[in-house]
Image (cartoon, rainbow, N blue to C red):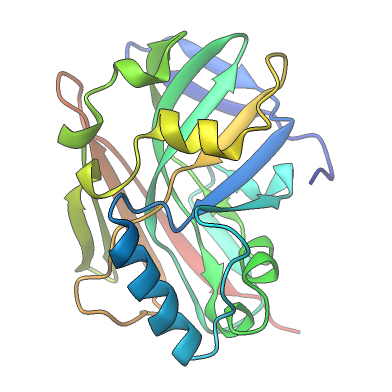
Length: 224
């Protein structure tokens, strides 16, 4: 899905500028490594009205201009929340890893998962780790991610619970060698099991051998 032209201005962990215009933005869902646990989660969500995905993992294209490094976003609904995700970037035949938030409209989610994800901006950090030409080189299972909402810890854990990003990329299966891609790789369970519709969000990713990547953003509900 594309709309306007968006240039993302980031830096690598070593301080080099990383500027690119994504052609495609994809949000991966249900990317847990334990298939039985994923099926159980799908069943739980169905019980509260969230439609079952057509495939597992599921992939949702969103507008390229939804991705932002801004410190503030606007949403149209009051029932929205973020969730921490590893984010794979691909441009000029190189891969980069950063952290982002799949901010989602939870009220819309009971009607259409795709619409719920497309309804909100997708904040990402302005720093990324250069993975070179092979995204599988990173020690995926040792990467730690966490999120906070209004100062309270919301999620935490290692990415050992998720499919490695190289497998998520392969399962998506439509990667074109010449495209510039932003791929959200899935998230971890909420610590208390319930969504929080807060205003101040903080996301972090710690990969072995690299400085932690962290960012914050504020959420404002747009007045009609």
